Image (cartoon, rainbow over all chains, first blue to last red; front, side):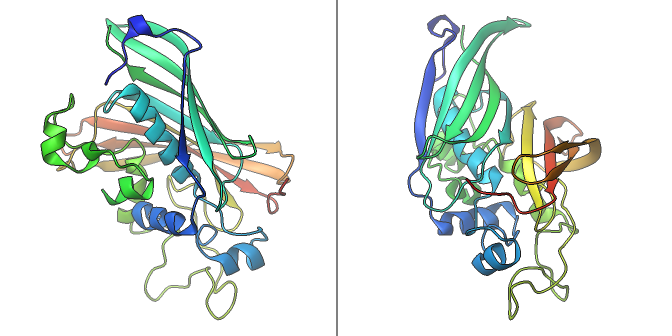
Length: 140
Length: 154
């Protein structure tokens, strides 16, 4: 499962569709699981009439969580040492998101082999919704 | 498992003891963004309705009350508060039985003129999650942004 430093090089990529046609129900599930009940995410009347948005939108952390699935599928379970993101555009119900990791560097630190990844998640229109980076332990 | 379900991750390492025992980590672990759900245990978390207190979501009216306050790590408060960035450092994997105690401190604040949301006020908060023995498990850095107006679309 785990990646091996000797088989990795800068520029290698891995991508996955992490959600196809995001449903409002999944946003509700995330609200319940995370405890973030901000009505912007689940309350259509509040989101449109009070906040002025076209509809509800997903928690940034749901996008980070879904992108995390791509990452752990790629680097293996329990291998991440760092994972950080910026939320650059909102994610709306109906969106299909593709998350992608690109190898920036393969290095050794204190005898441990590590891979640095650049992360980008885009919607069906190719618009970037999340950018970030991650570091994971890899086998020699 | 509820959290993994919500992010749509079917990986058995997040809930199946027998399966997880045979993996490299050797036990069930939490998904990478799981500590976000510590909001559930924060008695003062502003983005959860509380019995007997006003809530700003819709009821008879589109907005029932004044906006709640921001919540630590939750990415800002109501209406115009949005989550801008989130960063985690993992010192070890979170496993069942862990009791994680978060300690948050405010970080930097800064402002910038945005393209779609007017003036943007950023504020950072750093949360350390330590286990029952005081060992550092996860360090989280969250950046919230307060926008002057609704973010323009397009």
